[in-house]
View: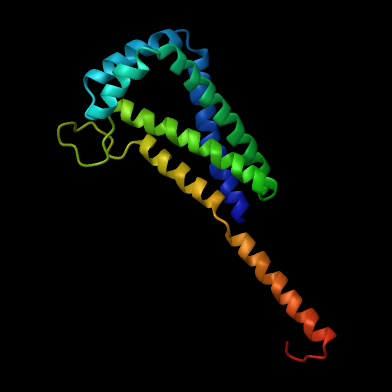
Length: 184
């Protein structure tokens, strides 16, 4: 499988996840008005004290604003990641498309990390909760998005290194043809 097709597959899967999550919120009748209650309830039992304080002091008083930001952020992230995944299926992304995709992945990573903390997810052995999933899917999604973002932002991706190597070989061959095989 070509590198851009693998990248496209991951973008399509992650984009679908965000789009469905955003659509669930947009189509729910009580998400915007019910978020404050959900945040208050979550803040009481969180193992992360810093995040419980953040919820009760910042997010709960402005829950409707954050509900709209989350919903629009998820819908936009999903749509853009799906679009970039579709483009990447047919050809490697341009540098501008890579930058846009990396920015969207950064926003999506921020959102999924917030959801991980909101749920009180653990990533270590937790015998107090035998029904815990071990490593939550949200935590895995965070690292998938971060890895993809880093891969997109790398200066010399594998394809670019191969292309640069091929062009230097062609340049050397042209030099030897035009200068009768003499060294530089």
